[in-house]
Image (cartoon, rainbow, N blue to C red; front, side):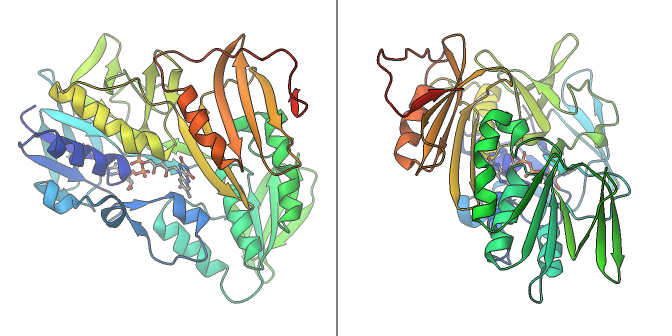
Amino acid sequence: PVDVLVVGGGLAALRTVAALRDHGFDGPVRVLGAEGVAPYDRPPLSKHLLDRTSPAWLADELGHDLHALADEVHLDRPARGLRVRAGGGAVVVTDDGHLAASCVVLATGAHATTVPGWRAATLHTAADADGLRAALAGGRRRLVVVGAGWVGAEVAGVSAAAGHHVTVLESRAAPLASALGESVGVMTTPWYAAAGVVLRTGATVTAVDGAGADGSVVTLDDGERLSADAVLVAVGARPATGWLGGALPLRGDAVPVDEAYRVLGPDGPFPGLLAVGDVAVRRSARHGWVPGGHWDEALHGPDVLVRHLLGVPVDGPEATPYVFSTQLGHDLTMFGLPASDDAVTVLGDPAGDGWTTLWTRGDVVTGTLVVDRPRDVGAARRLFARDHLPHLVLPAGLPDDLRTL
Ligand code: FAD
């Protein structure tokens, strides 16, 4: 490419700029962001909501100085629209005019999902974290968290540990049901009571009305009403693609890309148009379509993108999807991308000190989750460090602590 325009100001954008320079690209690089602040790390926003008041700047964590690496950085100039150019690249529309580039990288990440009309907080940005912290300031507060997903579980745990009265309302039958499936998610249910959090599953919220004399009121579908000082809606995130205004075909809400992170159109990849991180859904020979939403993809995807772009060989097999979470006093590490109907095998005792889950389709392992067993994490990672998904050969005479659901 002659020049590169990176749209987005988060982890994937910063890593793209750093990889371009690492691999010797010396043409002009420009960056457009929307938050008006330097790139920071999002995972601590929930895990350290109450014990960390300033963002974890990625410049400190990763040692990349965006301003030194890029020629132009506009952190408060969001892209408003995009026009694909016939000859390659695109024109990006902003409030301060149009920017054309021979290569445009979309790295606009995701937005927290919410429900229109609900008077409730979400947690995706450092500004959101500041708001939630302020709502929890000044003694023991009543916090209602809607959604027992990764973020909801993390916020519930740290808030209860800080002395707040926390209720989590989850419409599914188990926490983490969409990520792990109900049969595995339910194994985390006892963690809530042990951490002093009230978990109510099968609880569907229909309205959140805000701040009267007694704080907010959360209404359930059976008419029950709960009062709260703060309400957090943590029901997932959605790729930030609204600004594209239909300029690109989407898969779900995400920008579909191939193994080289090239944006896919009806006739194949658009030349000079790439997408990486939470905004993208990547085609993978090994896993099928891999959605964004996880830090590791935004950390490592940009290097692969830039290698393909510049013709630098890519070493090793593709990275496997990898998620980590610290919640309610437990450490979770997940590799792979299991489907909801894959079979589940549990090694260890979910009521004991730690356990590992394997998901399988036939004899192929599609994913693994390691809970509180740091020594299993390396082995789990190595399972997926090949070109093909591993096959599971269960030994004859299974160990006592192995059970199959
Ligand atoms: P983002 O970090 O969302 O950055 C995108 C940036 O682009 C944002 O700054 C945004 O403002 C900007 N932008 C948006 N629209 C435009 C536009 N039109 N023009 C210009 N800029 C725009 N993942 C894990 O694997 N493990 C965890 O434990 C974990 N914890 C998390 C906890 C929280 C509270 C949150 C919110 C996320 C967590 N994640 C976790 C997910 C992880 O943080 C994301 O996968 C990662 O941040 C994705 O990086 P990204 O650069 O693609 O997107």
